[in-house]
Image 1 (cartoon, rainbow, N blue to C red):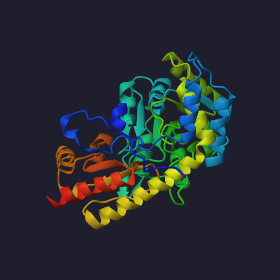
Image 2: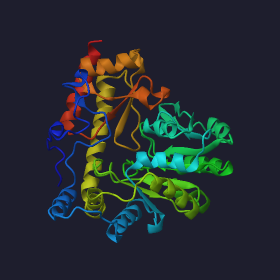
Image 3: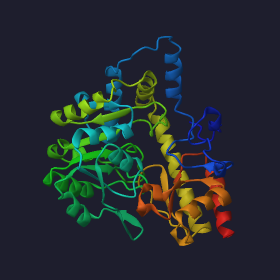
Amino acid sequence: MYDFEKTIDRAAFDALKAVPFNPSQEGCIPLWVADMDFPAAPAIQEALVTRMGKPSYGYTLCTDRYYSAVIDWMKRRHQWDVAKEWFVLTPGVVPAMGFAVRALTAPGDKVMIQTPVYPQFAKMIQSNGATLVTNPLKLVDGRYEIDFEDFEQKVKDPALKLFFLCNPHNPVGRVWKRDELQKLAELCLEHDVIIFSDDIHHDFTYGDHQYIPIATLSPDVAARTITATSPSKTFSIASFKMGNIFIEEEGLRQKYRKAVESAGVAALDLGAIEATIAGYSKGEAWFDEALKYIEGNSQYIEQFVAERIPQVKTFAQEGTYLKWLDWRSFGMTDKELNAWALNEAKVWLSEGHAFGKEGSGFMRLNMTSRRAVIEEAMERLARAAERL
């Protein structure tokens, strides 16, 4: 029903993903930043055209139209009964991380993350005055797992005030299971550590893998959790800055809201409001088809790598639309690996070491492009590997 094969010249629209930053990226297929190449859902296109045709662009409120669209989506897709009073609106999930650090830590306090992980986790912690602590994920038999022994030792530190969870996990593609989340939550509760859960990829799960909001485990966990979501990944509308932050406990919510308001953030912009309402209310069929298409891309990449570049390791895709690839067998430094991908393969990927030292020798590939683009990128990588 929906066309995911349509070609869009995104560079002509100054898209971040498509515009080279340096000469080595010229002529490369851009599969780096987490941003879809697909045309936005028709329902979103139509809603924006209709609203922008009404020449009044002043301050705009989020009314019950907005809250109901988000609440209904979370209930329908994830069986989570979110209440309107839990919302704190932010201009995205990344700023929401910074607000959490400002609201809940003091100089000298620590915040823990699980590397390799989205680079903005470390940046938001350190740029907002907290000390970074890492709980590296373990790679066991080709699958990433949580190192609970290490987590338990580090969460005992009285200076540790906040834990940043990523669920589903970017870049490794895990969707954390209930027992894993339960163990993390119990340790955080025992040592009075607040959980900030970045769940921006929550709609992207495959097979029988199910996204479970950690806040739904129990009332006690909910009282100590900040859950960050956004429709920006689901509907490829990242240029409209919006974050729906759910905080059930009133005291925690007020403390967090104070940090948001002190930054001068008062409301979402008009485009963000209309795109969110349209996506969550009328874009579900489009998203379901997009998810199937992306899963097909994932399966194609895994089969291609197994047959044509077997020295590269892939990981079972439980969630997100980002493929984590292990190139360590090539024996290159990170600088050499990136230069090879850009100059020899002419494919622009995300450098793994940016996700933490545990990402050294890895690269991340965005799977949300036309199949023909994915096929060409993989062919380029395979041919370049054959020339080594």
